[in-house]
Image (cartoon, rainbow, N blue to C red; front, top):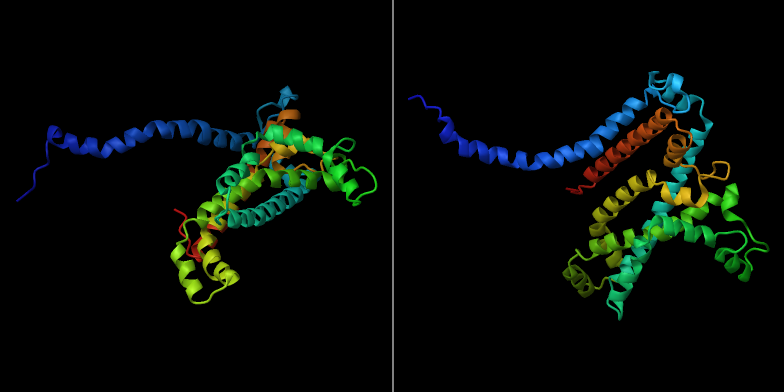
Length: 308
């Protein structure tokens, strides 16, 4: 017996039920395409063009891979920014992770005033980056800065040091400021991860005679590992494209010794008006971040961590 195809009026409720989720998601997809997909495609296209606003004769001319060839073979500033970016990301992530883990362990304990301290630890994170940059720039000032006063009073230095004006100190000064700025994020996220660990495991291990460090090594760290990896990955991506604090404090100087990859792209586009070359910088950074994210997913899969 051949089944009859339901008529359109009879099938309409089923079609509407299947189509409704897609219709409800359509505005979100349109907005996402407008603010994410289109700018990405536009940046990729601009990276193949000569798009320097101060050279109108060649504006919009298709030049193929010339921007990428110049970037990888003839641009010494690019390779310097790659090394500085690696130093910037590694130093920030390692220090912020270590300090954040320590603070999270402390704030996970019961003590008087814990709620107040938890609120206080968020203060650097809620300060606007422009305010934080200006504050730390003044603290590192060579004549009136608080950092010089402290180091002089402790006898660590004999004369004031213009930290932000010297190539060997400029990037590290910004790293110190950014560690202060980013530690609250690690602390709060890692504290949330700690609070998901059942207390029964600690009670059972205490009964079995496990000490503090044994409980930390065998219980806390294995169950804490998914949150540590997720937060580290997110912070790595954010720091790899971070501009504000560096540019406010040093402007990428002195002599480009604090010019990371995103700062180089910003200076190239906004100050030198070369949007084609800046797009090549941005696309390269995006590809590197995709590779890093892929390696992270492989690591998470190998460690059997569910990040969904």
